[in-house]
Every structure is written in C-alpha cells, then in structure tokens.
Length: 267
Length: 308
Image (cartoon, each protein chain N blue to C red):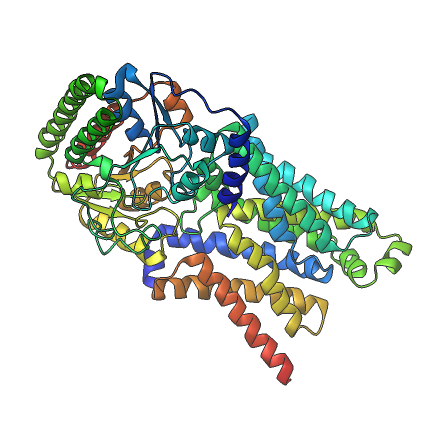
C-alpha cells in the first residue's frame, strides 16, 4: 500500500482530500450531535440535489447554486426548528423531502437529465483533481479556524444555551455559523468524496469521540483522531481487499466506533 | 415502484381521452437513439418514429413519464434492444396495455456476447445489468446492425404490406451505408499497432472489440454505476504505463474525470469514445447522426491505437 501510494498520484490525492474533509466533518460533527442534529448531513444532501437541479435548469454553475440553495435550506431548517417548535429532525425531514421533490421536478421539466445531475452529486474519492485537494484544505482551514475562534462561546452555548444567552453570547449567530458550515461541508464534501462519506464522517467519528471523551476538548480531538484513522485504515483496507474506497472508509469508522463503545461499557 | 404509479395514473388519463384515429401512417416508438435513426431511415415517409429516451438521459436509470405511456398506447410498433437494457419497459408496456401493439426486440436471434465476456478480467469487477445474461450493446457491431435493419423492414412490411417495396429498398440503402462504415473501420484500424481500448467508462465496446480484433479494458463493469476500486484503478494505470497507451477513452455519460486521472498517471491523452446510445441536447440540436458519432469514434480509435 505504501508502495502504491508512492506510485500513484491518485491515491495520494484521495488520501489528502479524505484527511482534510474528514477533519472538517469531525469537528463540526461534535457540535451537530450535541445539538441533536445528526441527520442534517443527510438532509442537506437532498437540499443540495435541488440546488444542483436549479443550477442546471437556470444555467448557473451547479456547484454554486447547490451551495446557495443548501445554505438557504440549512438556515430554513434552523428557523423552522426555532419558530415552529418542531424537533430538529422534523424540520430536516420536511426540507429533505421538498429538496428531493424540487430536484426531481426540475430535472424532468428542464430536460437536462440524470446524467449531468448525478455527475455533480456523486464525487468519487478515487478521482480527485489537484484543485479539489486545495478545496478540501481550504474547507478544513475554514471550519477548524472558525470553530477555534469561537471555541469558548460555542462550548458555553452547547452545554447551557439559556445561561449563554443571558451572558450575552450571540447564540443565534453561532447557531447559524455551525449550520452554514455544515451546509458548505456537505456540498463541497459530496462533490469531492461523495455523499456517503460526508454524511457518515459528520456523524460516526463525532459519536465515537463522545463515547471516549472525558471533556469536550477530548471529544473533539477524539473525533478528529477517529476520522483520520478511518480514512487511512479504510483506504488501506480498500486497496488490500479490492473494495470500493468510500464504503470501506465508512465501515472503518463504524468499526472504530464499535471498539470505543465496547471499551466504554467495560470501563 | 414509481413507474408503476405513473403507469396507473396514465392509464386513467388515457381512458379519459378518445383514442386517436390510426390514420395512414405507422406509429413507431423506439427506446434508444440508434434504433430511432434506423427505423426512420427504413420507414421513410410511411411512419411516424419517436424516441422514448430524451437527449441527455441515461437508458439504465430513465423513468417513463405520463406522456410516454400515452404515446405507447397509441403506437403500432415498439422497437427495443431487449434483455434488460430497458428495465422500465415491461412496466411501461403493462401501463400502455395496448393489445394491437407489436413489439420487436432487436437483440433477439443475434450472436450475442455473454454479459461478462469481452472485457478483460483485470479491469472487470462489477456485475452486469440486473437480470441480464448478455452484453446489450449490440448496435456497436455494424454487422449485427444490418441484421437488425432487415428485421425492421420485415416487421414494418408485415404491418403495412402496401409499403413493403419501399421499406426493403430503403433498408438496402441503409445496409449499404453500414457496410461502408464497417469497411472504413476495417481499413482504418488495420494499420494501428495498438489493440487495447482503455476506457475510463463502462464496458460498452465488447461488440466493436470483437468485430475488429480489439480488447476493451474498462474501469467500470457492464454498467457505469458500481464505483471502481483502488486496486482496479491502480491495475489499469499500471497496464496503461506498461503498454505505453497513447490514449485513455471516456464516454459522455460517465465524464472524463477518471479517464483524465489514468491518462495523467500514464502519460497518455484522452479522447471521447461514444457508445452511440444517446445524444446530448446540444448534439440533438446540431442534428448529429449515429453515423457521424461512429466516424468520430473511428478517428479517436485511429489516434489512440497508434504509437505515441
């Protein structure tokens, strides 16, 4: 495998992009899970589907329209959750169904069918271009940087929302920040490594990190460690076993989660 | 599931509209682009030929719409490839429920390749189309195309005996064009040293490879939905490097991403090799023909199979 990585630039790019996207997902994932928003990655991918269809129908750049529509959808989910008194997953379910419906209608009515649409939706971790590696690095810097800048306030708000609000923490702005970052991560991530990997990496490493954690910081660091190990172990196993890469990476993450879960129950 | 509901809904709609008078013209519905082009050429003015799959859509994943069920319900003849290439067709036909509709399966009676043969084992991982025992891409064999054209003329003649001489005359002219194309491929590929078509797409060129003594080495299997594995991709890169492949081919539905990746690793270039099953909206607007696509393919193959 090491030999293969040295030989094949496409494996090097898969590893690099995978590691950076996994990092962004793991950091965001911890906040999303503690907010009970585990399904948001899944839901936003459906909204992004509508966004790509809008782009193809109107003739914009589909990735851009997907970003705009997904960010709007993410803010809509947040709004609905707050003001309609619905639980997080109800708002996600509504938006993801409507996203899928709009996407299907636009794809059919505009006559630009599934081939182009699927091309924009399903990234492939093996076919990553140099530019996309750069994009993954930028995404990781953006997510980690913004979270680090707001770390204390995010921490306060995550554990005691009311107290944070009273203490003057801009709770809604920070909510919006995490939600928008999640939308950007889902859209870029699914174009680059595919929706399966992004949706999984937003949830499983964070869940694993929370299993092992004694503090919030160790939960975030643990999630990052699990995410990075899953990408490395998954890609390695995929090469050795001749399995599809993204599925194997997801299974590796699940395996690590399972190990940490059992360790915690014993400990 | 959803095509079922569409069929039920359309049946309700169709029942509400008075059926069109049959008229003097034969109404022919075809599934994929080459069949539509052949049927139009054979039918001339004697038939109204329509194509089900719209430009840009993929035959494997396309879903019929309400209007398609109505169209089929008022047709005289349906021409498909058969054998699982059109998985939505049985549902659509049940929906149309037309007792007078004649159905011609173009692949029936042809010398078919098994679904897995014709690809190189090194590159072939994925399963075939569900429930499919043979490779459906028969239209890329210009000899088999001539047999299909004969079958079209025979079937149309049986439906409109008065037009039989015209059908048979136009079928002969079309077969002559196919023979010319076939000869151009034979002559054009004879001088090429390379025998391997390395494809960043799916295994669509088995018949073409068989006819002209080539080997196709696809990244994907028989249908383009299963993702390639790291090992398969690495093996194909190694093979392209070893054999000094000049060109890695790609197809429009899959895109050139994986082909460009292999090409960059192996120092090759990329060229489009069109499976010929459908046009993009732009090609449709430009009036691109099947023969034009195949001539462009020959150019690409002559380039790619020559030494660097």
